[in-house]
Image (cartoon, rainbow, N blue to C red; front, side, top):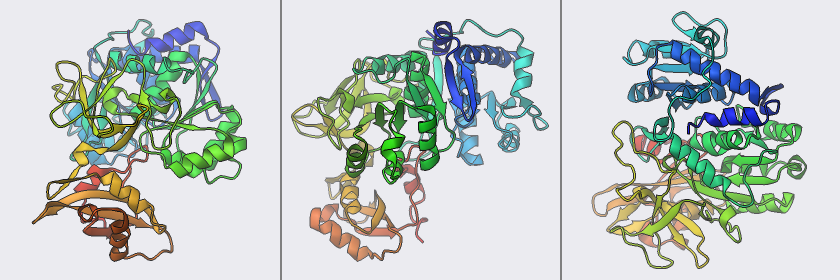
Length: 507
């Protein structure tokens, strides 16, 4: 099956039902199917070959949805591009993926036209939000018109590459994770097997998570298409504006990330705003227990947490699978996903011991572009690099990234443990911990700290605070105060960028 077939099936079941709500406009499933078919034909008119990569540098608009499913319908691989990327970052993704076409906004077109001169594979820059494209670019309207009749039958599917999505990694440049139609569809099926259902046909789902991120793309948009529900597209997260849209559209499902819930927890009329909501979920990073408790107390709604990776399309676990959703837990594996905790030798750890999370299932990716390196082993197991432990009930708790492990004189230091202690200081607004070289201990702990507005804090204060709760080797030996920390699109601190810019962030 081709992922774009989900659009055609929804259009056949409920052609007149709204598929997408965006600002004051609505697009039915029949409308969406027509646009998807026409876009697939338009892309074919550009001379693309099956499997060519189509980059999509658009925000959460109907244009993104049409371009995404249109590329898949035509047998091409979609490359969602982070809309906050700088020109050098865009150049890396477009060049590394070998994209033949990039679909973007008129404002981004000049930079992309400049890159076209340096990227050999990039043949077309297509503008989606203007009828008159800049010189050298094409308008999507013109491309669609050149395609003639739409493509009703999808080209390819199953093990064919559907999405090439670039992951930030823990260091170095982003790598392209190859997700097949099989992997993306499998994860939708796995999520659909959760009881009670995560998304149903009569649901209205908030789509504010960036669609260029796997979380917004598959559990968000993908589940809307699979169920034939209605998606509410929001381009930018603003706490008050987004809540107003939740009220106006009577949203029932909110796939979110911790920064969203942190911001919402400070809004007085949150309970009224969430009156129509039946399910709140959070992922991409740990949700502070205080925020979870605040939302539960004020709204009666529990925020169910999950865990996943780009490489697993992405959902691996959720507290929806737990008997009791515990604060700080990532729950249990979703149906159809096998999960083990292993030591460095690959053996299962003893009860209560932390181990690396390894997963197996039809949702696992095909390796990294272009060779498939780093994919699942011969038995189908993929090592996530994340460390977790299971409690007596079988519920999982993340400890940290194995790749981010700091070795101080041979002793393991998990950055998250140190970060949790730092965040308990009343004057610390945000903190991140990385390992840096040390002449005697091999590595040592460095803390990057954002101080709360108006507070005064010294490095000595930070170290003394940590010494109360942590062994000496776990305490930071270097403290750097910074104005802000770099974040991914879903609010996770980017440790890779911190390492690359170490020493450059001090104020």
